Length: 155
Image (cartoon, rainbow, N blue to C red; front, side, top):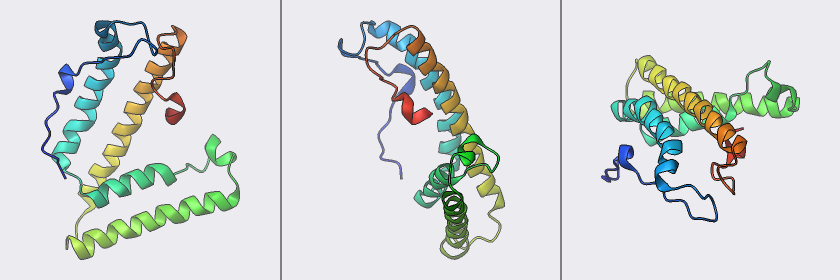
């Protein structure tokens, strides 16, 4: 799954065109580097250790997309049919992962692996929360002329 490309995330340069912001590269690094460092420590290292397969990554992504807590604001805004579809899709994801482990990987005890996948979801949610704070601060101080962080994707 690895492309073989090595990226030094601690020394990434942040070049932003003048039409997006008037900040220098150094100031841009001060804004972006903390989140990059946070993600590297909290998400990338666990991902490297787990080495999830494409099927596992699809499971995690699908679960994040289709999981809607019953008593959440989001659930209150959705129709019963949509909520039913979300539950059905989540169940299909579980079934697919079970099939993958049982018949393709031929492992019976995969509970610890699924637990590690759940941790990846939690870490991703933490990274999004940290990014949310960054977005709020950059908006508050009008750091960017355009929505560089695509804030609507993190809502």
